Image (tube, rainbow, N blue to C red; front, side, top):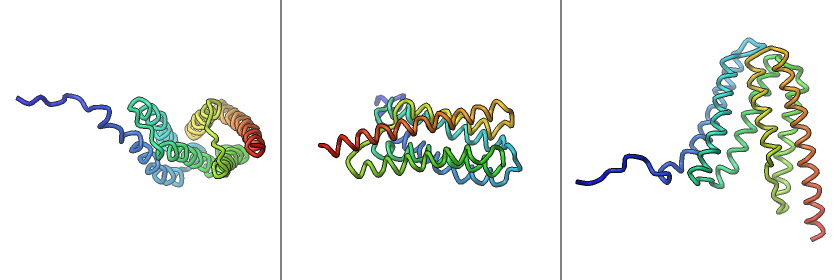
Length: 188
């Protein structure tokens, strides 16, 4: 009698992290639609959707490492989808008139400059990686954005502004590292 595997092997699930990244990307237009339809200044439905999409970010990274399924696509697409998710949430906060637009605009500019800077440096052969502080800043920005979409409480606004400060600080650190690496590569 043939023996059938009772569980799926890790190798069979290696597609899952990239599929989650693509599902997160596909959820963004739906989130935009929910935000456009929202009355404001908060949108619990948008907040819960934002949170669900954000949680899958951590899940796909965990699975990629656990299943030994880290791919070039995932290393490029995952941070891009993270930035797009945060951008949708930040634009949503502006549309809902939830916060002063300066905070979301600062985070949007920070992300745009960081992505452009990382790409420009990569063309010059200088690879920049997101460090633990950058990951923490992104996690804080995601949490603060989701909570600001959910609640109009003062603490949610305070957490959001803390995310802005941490985001700017990590950007300045990346700029410092980029300048150092650029001057080192120029001398070499």
